[in-house]
Image (tube, rainbow over all chains, first blue to last red; front, top):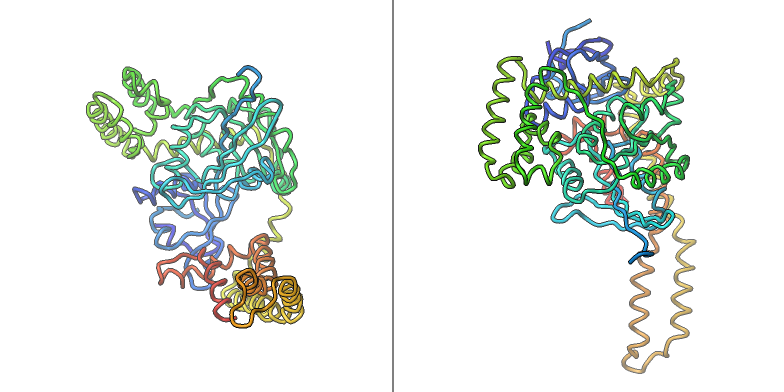
Length: 74
Length: 419
């Protein structure tokens, strides 16, 4: 499943970054690396973007970006 | 020429929000010059300071997470380091996000330039329960480590000293990130091949170039094509190797490289940082629960913007009846000392200064509004609420092709029109 499908409060682990090119590179630069654990904090009031916690910091992603990250639930 | 002071070029690099600008400011003080990088709208801040007999020319590079060639900021930072060859790079690190910041540090180190690792925002890191063994960290990165709290000016002297010391040593950074057997078996032959090329090996750090080529970096490819006599052959070799790697390991080399960088970063952090329980985070989390709440969030946001309007525009305008007489009095005073009014035409030396004054005080009349508005915006920014506004509004702004960060220009222009 992808990160875009995760619900607030859930935790997951990154399996792969699907996107290539600039989006894929940027996600990897920000620490979206296989094996990294992610906790979904919340959705924005209009559902998009989502706020995540990983590697001890918080990051917001749009759903369109989050669906480029393949994850497995823990 | 013997006793003349030397100029030393030093670049300040770092990820966004690492407090890089603050460090740049405390190092240079008021001696700054802001321009653009040639041909682009990316701001270039330069400044200088003196230490001992040297003048240090400081350049603030754009804040970037990485040094790929995908964005203008990254290309600028990279080209500057490659072409201007600064004597030292100060790598400003947000200590509380050490692992992610090291990802950039590695790429800077790979370029072979002597680094000073500046662990900034130490106060935040300490509040989060991080205890850092700076010496150990420095040993692993082959660079001096200086701790600072930028916004309180702590560590400024030590940072200047470290830059000076390392520039006098004049040796390049010996840190070498090992990408693991699988990747090294591709990187080493490639580096060897590049070293046969006299132009490339004279001008560019070859290890860096090999890694970038393996990452399929278009700017690195361009460097090879333009500088190497048999660039096409080299690029074909790279292409073949990339395909070979992808086939063998079921993964693009650039992904494996990024992964290795993070793996090494994690290892270094584990070796040099011990964590106690963090104290402060829970408060931020609780505030966020309210400020970003589904229902309360938008209400608080609307109230904040209304408050901004009420305090800056409405109340600011209410101050103008008190400030205007001062401006008018100045104009009257000026009028009284200028040549007197003519019968048909005013003398030029009267009308000219008065026009200028009228124009100026018309603008100065709005100063109270500006002062209040910018003070309030500074508060929003410093408390971090601006980022929450961006989070809440992103979904709406996307319709206009903007992102949530456009909130500030939108709010300001909205207030002006509204006011």
